[in-house]
Image (cartoon, helix red, strand yellow):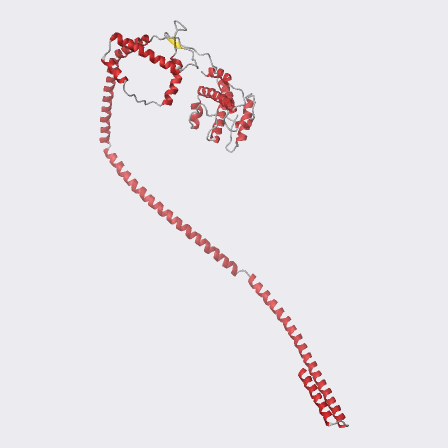
Length: 444
């Protein structure tokens, strides 16, 4: 079957350039790959070893919902096939932290060592799906079969005495075939009824045929099955090739023959089944007796087991309570430890501050600065005091000198007044002198 698929795959290959043609080629190639994987027993060697389900026929042909899982499955399958071909587990190994590009590069190196002709870009394998991925798997499966010395042979058909399957006509209308078969069955049934007369079973069947039938089959599954078996309903007579077999009486005769065979073997089969049932009943009875005996013998042990189980439950409850207490005390210890650490940090900071002489040094430096500033202020105060005393002395000297000058002026005026001026003039001069003296005294 796989050989036939390999022959049909090139014929179904459509010109490149459309996504539909690429998808059809990928689907056909994937079917071939899966058939070869079944031959290689990949279900045991690959799926079961990795704990995954068997792949469906479009797994690598179309992108999956989880691209990373699809790419990992693709690289794992390539690793399994390359190991089976080369018998070397290190020929292609994907490390845990390899990115997709590194994995693809390693795969391409392994494929080149197996003489794989690369006619596409290596980046097209990063998705793990599509025509290129299926082509790589097809090449590896061929190499694996070649390494196992497996080759496809021509199929051998069994010779049938009555009829064989005719060529499938894809253009045939399955509905017409079904209608013709129903008409022929009705005609044959009418012929039998006319010749033998209606019986009670026939009347019952006729009555049941007019009743309402309720279908319990999925219409989609029914249509799919009809499309599958419809073309096979065309039969040809092997003795007279080219002539369709429409003799339904032969089928009825064969059916009756099978019915007679079944009826003849039914009684013997019933006796054998009855004997087997009797043996099974005896075995079950003996098993029940043994079970009761064992229960009676081990009743004391069972009671001890129940008691020990109850004690174990009590111990487990105590252990659970103790574990809860331990967890609570552990949390409390953690809190106390945190508080102790905080207190230690405070004590350390204070002890460091007490033993640190830098504040005293700063105080001494500040006192020294104050002393120097006090000396500077004392010096300035002395200078200012000296300046004030000198200024007072100058003022007092100036006052005395003015008083002396005023006294001399008054004496001169008196002398002049006595020399011939009137009393009025003298009084005016004396008033002027007194006014002058007053202004001078106020100034000083």
